[in-house]
Length: 282
Ligand SMILES: O=C(O)CCC(=O)C(=O)O
Ligand SMILES: [Fe+2]
Image (cartoon, rainbow, N blue to C red; front, side, top):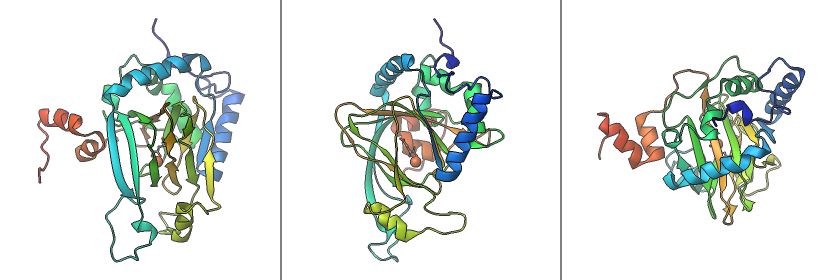
């Protein structure tokens, strides 16, 4: 039996198929005000409870195809600036590790694939973000990713490059793996980096820090350009499984080949080389 995207969503709570309904208007209004205040908005119970088990099962099946990444980065993902004092927040390095499955590896019959490709969901997310129109990424690898964080994995402090990120948590770990953030800690456009508070975030003393409560099935909209955030260390045998749904204001958004090889590794490099793309081997 083929499944429809709308069968996966808790429409009684989130009527994404009827954005003109009073409840949908209320939900959208609430998202916008949370985003304005916090740069973040969580929609708990977005997925129907009855579909969670099989979505987790599908994502666990996919995990064997995932690629493990290990990074040692600073918050600003740039090179070490030795002109700054050694203890400057730009010169603090943190490890990150997780496993990722790219969009081209996700079977079209998997529920997460079907959900991502649902126009009603795209329209709802645009409305919740207060945007006229958004599009699913045109990037064949980045559009939809499943990430797995097992015992000892974490995603260190960073700002996002995209205007917004949309995630859907499929499975909570036994312990840890919390999404922690400091809303609007900087103003990138104004060049105000607020390094004093960044240093406080690093040592856990910032009053801006919040932990987002997220149960499996929660959809999260997050504006991470100015809000410093991380996923705290995950513990235990049960993995934190999240999907990242890519949307953009531009209908043609694609990452460069180099970025995709950096993110997804030799498998993607081989695919691109077979199409005639060449990469500098220096
Ligand atoms: O896994 C998450 O909850 C958030 C991931 C994140 O911060 C990102 O993909 O930029
Ligand atoms: Fe992020």
